[in-house]
Length: 410
Image (cartoon, rainbow, N blue to C red; front, side, top):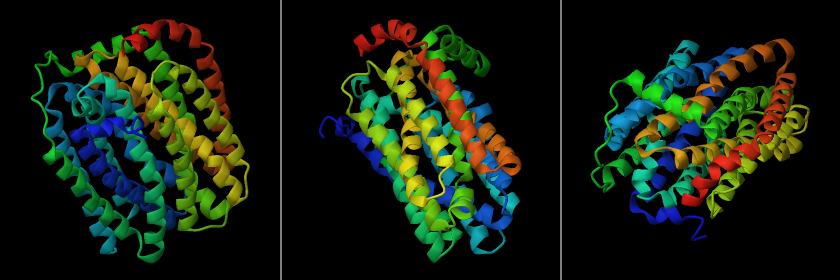
């Protein structure tokens, strides 16, 4: 256990872990409430996909520039701003819903606004990890624990959201999310950080981004990793946008059923990040990524054909394990190979592939589910995920030879 939680020995990371955990629980509560409110107002799978699209599409275009921003500015100060803006978005959403004035376009606008904020906040948080733990020795563990808190909240947040939705309605979920950001703001304010060393100047936004893209493309492992993450994000991750359809229409449940389904996927993700946090070396992560992509594909295909709640709850952990293990392991490798002056930008390319591509998949899922039904759409995504895993596995030998020196050094 001491080894599993070793990054928590650093005071600044411990503060971040506590504050971000509270914030993540609130975020998941809002996501579940938002999806439920959209489906309650419209009854449309396409609108579910559209809201997810609006909330994530800004990341596709802006996260790379968020990485440049991260490499140029004081990361803690920038995060104080992004967290305050996120709090404002949740508070406005809560006020509109309490007043009974909320409409679908409000939900689309709120999702898009938060997507813009996250496009800058997410690269900041990832690049800030090394400053908080102070050493690359603890960096892989910090990345895994960061994913752990996200997925622990994925278990707690949806379950709480289901209870709050049933007892009090969506507005209270939004309000609780707004309150949760106060914990993160307090954690950032309490940190004691060393003055950052001088950073190599990034001449301009486009030049800095071009430099990172060239590095990612020329180094074959980063090219393969970012490519697989983008594929998984497009064909596998958007299944979550259709969860209200499975919960209400295919399994005959309610908001609590939705919380259970999302929580089951979160349990699998928890298992994945606990495994990553407990690893003593990074060697072999590329093999784990190939296996995890297979797990996500198989889980999606089988889940799409399940008409029973207990079987769905047993299959979704395979999906959660696969998706988060691919994303977190790829992030770990990329941060280990990234030059210090380029970490924010390289991380932002990973975020673009994972979170930025997702809305395109969500939109496609919504359109296909309207035409062919949710089960057929999810099954097709699972099959494509399996094909991507096979292609990645065929390049493992080449990747290992190039990554071995980096593993040995770190």
